[in-house]
Image (tube, rainbow, N blue to C red; front, side, top):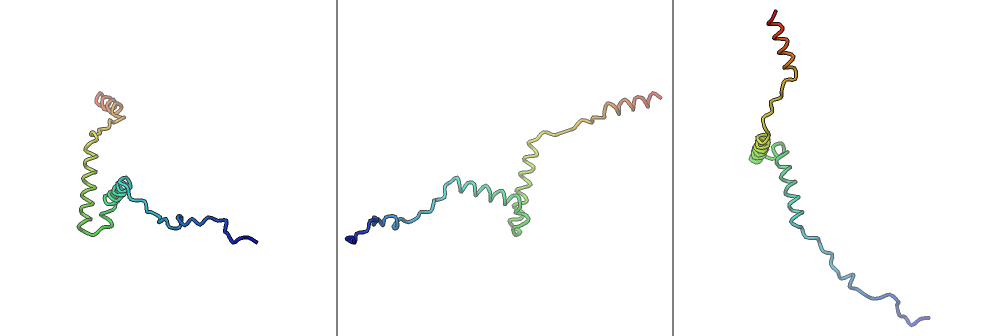
Length: 94
């Protein structure tokens, strides 16, 4: 039969390659920081121990007040004001 030669290549470079772990990018770390910050503000006063609980509560309260302070005061008009005024005038005539 044959001369004993194998037809497959003996390239061991694929076996010697070490798989690399993708390094954390600044984008990934930024997203993680935003998620952790949101969780701290949203649920920290329910989950964390006492010193961090009050910090979380105060932070959330401060953010809420800031956002509400940015909106103008809303004084809704009474849709029935004209009708009520007409009724009052009618009652005062009699």
